[in-house]
Length: 542
Image (cartoon, rainbow, N blue to C red):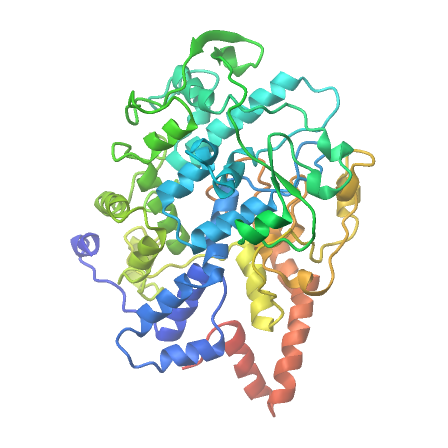
């Protein structure tokens, strides 16, 4: 409001109720509201009608799925190992944990600590160890003839780089080969972080994908075995359909190693030794913290660290408004964008920490704000003076991510199957794609795409099988990343292929047919049928 008043403006009026509910539902659940839900909200005279709907969405299981979608990009989650041979891995129980963590509102400081160092916590539980799969989501090669240490070093660097981008919002990887050219990070700083992740008893070559007898064993050591008994007793949030043990890649520090600065980043050119420590330009690393990943987690969530809370609340803001207060959500350094509202970002970050790193509370605070509830209609003045909405002169206007767009089609047609969690599924995609891109021979279950049947064709897109060398083509068309690396901001493109997919994709065509079969017999003339279609797909008429 202060920024608008400085420019001689006022805020836009509040969006109408139907529009507001649609916006809120898509943002908090990733799914559109039903016409019945819209009618109930529009006709609810109670002064807290909007708050009740916010709380209902935050309490729904769909909320955890929506929030997990953002985190999977940052965590570079995939169902295959990547590189040339790109065979299967069983990391989906970790994805189930992420959904569970968001739905149970695990505080963000614990959410980070468990993923970075859950195995190092006193009397670590299986759930806390499972969370460390975050660190093992990176690509792993299965190609014969590779130099083991070269790739092992690459995996350690990936974990350090991911920490920099996903948690701290810095381009830490720029200091791998030399001191950072723009930000105050030296090469020693980089390898100080690298050292935290350098003690895992892993190899540079994954062999199980070739040797294992079944898909459930495709995990590179160290791995956490999850049995049926575990799921019944302690990991009840895992949706495990079959029987037998699933192995999930996790962390341990059973292989103590000395860490050296690598000349020009080359694995075979060690220089001076370094100790595990965090970049002092951000915050000091206290002497009473252990020099391991648990100590690193303490440093990340300490009140002296100015970045962790700011980076995350900025990502939440970007999710709700289409862009962050800092537009470069991945880069808070000197080459990144300046915040549009620095005092607001400061306040949000401190408020987040003061309230116990409570993610749901922060989301609730933002969506209840008058800023979020504004109409997205742009005045003629704003088109000229604030076309990118940097002054927040109107409500958010942004495109849906690929997964939510597909889920929207399924939900509005009534085809969406809302089962939460479980092994990844294979919906419709053009035949022959995996065969054309397969580089190896006899590489198991990822040589040929075997389409699922029944309700698995209509699961939420969060559960679509993610093969790194060839993600689902519709996801790729709508700017989803390959997940070879950590990504916290998807590119936004606009191509004719996107329009063609919306007109011709098998899933869209089937959903259109099913929707037409529901609407056409129920209404006597085309005008009424079209009104109902409009209500179902876009918004309620008022």
